[in-house]
Image (cartoon, rainbow, N blue to C red):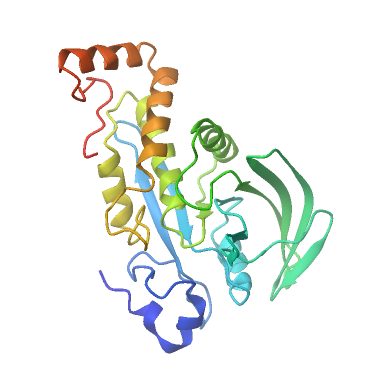
Length: 284
């Protein structure tokens, strides 16, 4: 699939990383002549149900792309933004602060953003905001949820916090059809893990097997390099531990007795990874 729009001279400064570009076919197109933002639509269909989880996976905004980010959020009707990085990690800026501090407001080109509240814990923060289109005066309420507990390198030692975070995201998006805006720094790694986790939860709820690699392939058909980091040529080495641990934890919640069946499978296969008929972790 082509990525020619990202390579246009006028758009180069809008890409956080030179080697991470959106597919032309699935990129989000802004209204107006300057229509580029490094973001793709990702739709995850849940078989045997009418559910399609809609996302916009994008890079963390740069100082010069904050207005584009809010324009995209407005035009797509999104009321939930999920942020999976801190602003600075190991001394490197991963994402510009594209929102005002609590009780403050800021203007980004044709949009004003006000932050009413900020609450949370050591793992994540929830911010309630108002997004206003200045020209029309129309306002919309939105929520931003920021995950804080991901270490600078690798993955969380304990998947519980992240699983709780995904559950919170699901509760906030319940009953909404518009896409959820999800970003980390590049919009491919942690962003992909969150989409994988939510998709797996939905599959389990519908009694469907979970094939993580197939989920990743579906995401990569819509945004390049999902769950693949620039520092590693392998597909899933960095995120595999948190995905596996979370899926095993989730399985007991949705299918009591799964872990016992899984352990029996292991024993019957002399230590090799067995396959539970209800939960098939294929491809890892």
